Image (cartoon, rainbow, N blue to C red; front, side):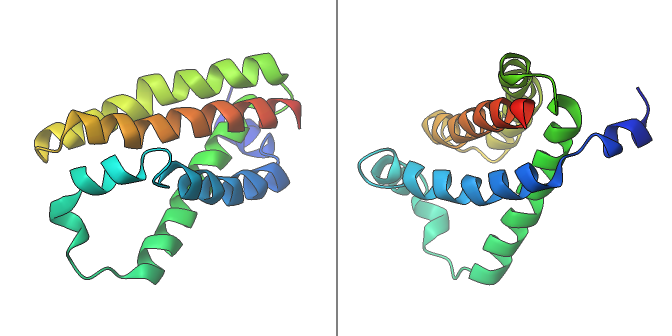
Length: 134
């Protein structure tokens, strides 16, 4: 499989849909009734700083779009089952280890890692499932 065939395999509409979905999932994930209270407690040192909201949300949208486009290249037309498994595999062998290394070096809590990485495991699993069908 070469790069041009992977890029031609991307289905852009589901990438856009899942990018929007990633913000809905993140909003729900960080509500007090789920993980918001614990997330805020664990992030105490960084939430007090002035935040550049356009940069945070714009950058997140671009990064999610790129990541989901890459997932689409791998799972489009593979069926929901394969899409789900590939989404889980990507999050377990790339996203989680990369985030864990970053959190270890930043001396951030493993509870915070579980919340943050958990959202990406759910996102990539759902996105893989959807994109596998689309």
